[in-house]
Amino acid sequence: MNEYILELAARHNLPVQKIISTNELGLDFQTAIAEEEGGKRWILRIPRRCDLLSKIQKEKECLQFLKSKVSFDVPDWKISSQDLVAYPLLTDKPALEVNTTTQESTWNIDISSFDYSENFAYVLFELHSVATQGSSLKVQSSKEVRQEIIDEIDLVKSELELSNGLEVQWRAWVDDESYWPTFSVLNHGDLYAGHILVNSKGLITGIIDWSEMQVGDPSLDFVGHYVGLGEQHLDRTLEKYKRIGGKTWPRMKDHIIRRAAISSLKFAVFALTTGNDEYIQTAKGQLKG
Figure 1: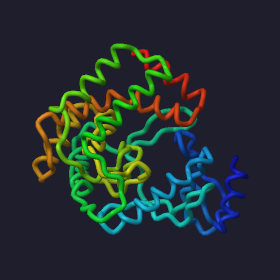
Figure 2 (figure 1 turned 120 degrees about the vertical axis):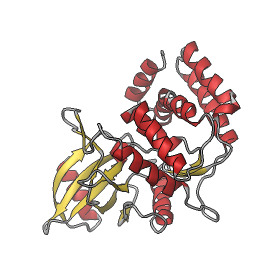
Figure 3 (figure 1 turned 30 degrees about the horizontal axis):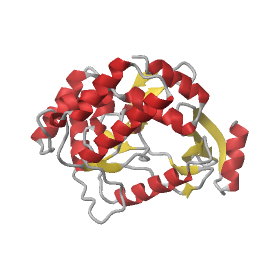
């Protein structure tokens, strides 16, 4: 596989000499770190399917829109084609790294402290405050998001076996307006510690993987934080976010937790979209409740 990646890079005139590591965890892309003879390192993202070009083009447009509007680092794509995306490796490490061989997780932050969670609030406030008027970004109101989730429930129920308990729980949340915000913000859409870069002091310096960026429900950007670090860290982030001017609503925390609970629905939709039998079987197991 490493030889194939080097050949692919060479076809795009990228002068890398060796593969430092590969990551197979991504559902859409295989990722590799490659190095030039002089030591410069690159992130190479190799699409797993041939239908990802529109997604690649969308993410490229998102990054071009975003890079001059935020203070933290984002990828600077130098190659973006249907078979390869490449950009210079950003300086710092992800807050959470997973060993692709052992599947063991390593935190590059002090999870016994709330410093990272409070820093995260500042980063989210900056992102959610970006003005998007005049952009070509996808915009979804809460009403549209709710209808999308209803359609996804209907799709999964018709194509896969869905437990009655999960269906009742999901529909009750979607139908109850009190959970939902009345406004939309610019969000990353797939924000968890593996996509957040931190320096040696644990401060956030960059964010990667922007393929799901859109203007929509702000709770999306808190879900991965809650799932990864738990309720106390979510509380600290929400407290700081509100204090510095982040726009909130009465049931925001409950809404975030409910959003986290539909991960199996989202994975099932992804599995059906790809048609991958292994994913579909995994989704069926998750949907039993």
